[in-house]
View 1: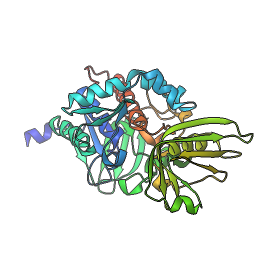
View 2: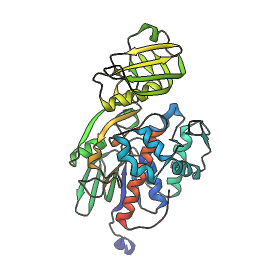
View 3: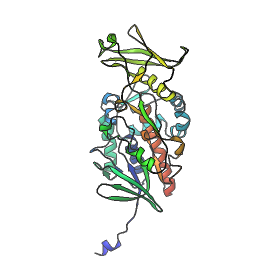
View 4: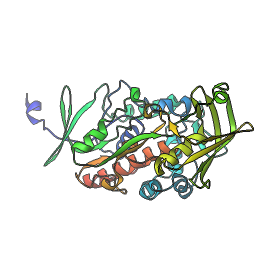
Length: 362
């Protein structure tokens, strides 16, 4: 009884809402910096969407200089993401993943994969680190609300509540909802007074009613190109890479990157020319596949409402956002996981400063 009487009700220093790429990375950084944290994940396991990346092979970053990485992102994302990316460049992420004991494979263009070719290798490595560091995980446990208080936050679930000094929302976008990305983080942001930019599909295929394409469904062309044309027919963006024929149209990295550019800059007056296998298809009506099928979500918590250095809300001190819940996205090829990792690290570094804790990490 004496020991029970001495127990104190203390808040957890950091509650992480979401156990995907950003949430796992944030928890790993927090563990190495000796910041007590608790991870909430609505699914029964961590990293569900990460397990699907690059067709299950997990292209987790692109090993290129940070400045080149930012040029590839393009504005408006690059300018906002620059502080986080410069503090946590791809090379640091590569070193960090290697430090987990994961053997890596680098492609000629810099794309980085686990040598096993299995995304589970990296997800399990993060899981092992969190286990070894004693980070508590609340899986199969959706958060139902986040309530600011004078001395922190109350994080609510259907079964219990937790008192936290700081909260990091890392719930992802709205694509592939079966992985747990259902928009709850965006809802929390709205409820707490943040602007949320309209969510739409990014890095997705385009529907084309063309029998010549549907007849080739399943064909893959590795040396394809796609060009975005403005109303005058001038090329305003282009991408080289894979082009795939589908029963409903065209996909592949070249198409994905052009579709993302158009979604960011507006469809009005735009068309696309896709070259593959000696064929050229001009798309004058651009119809993207549904958001639920997209590789990434464009839109989310407004960049204007989040400090790009700390990832802390400009409206609610101690509330942070990281990863795809933000209106931040990149091309295909490891860019989006890198953004998740870099923004997560920036948030935890800021939490550490708020807690006046010490330590070194990634």
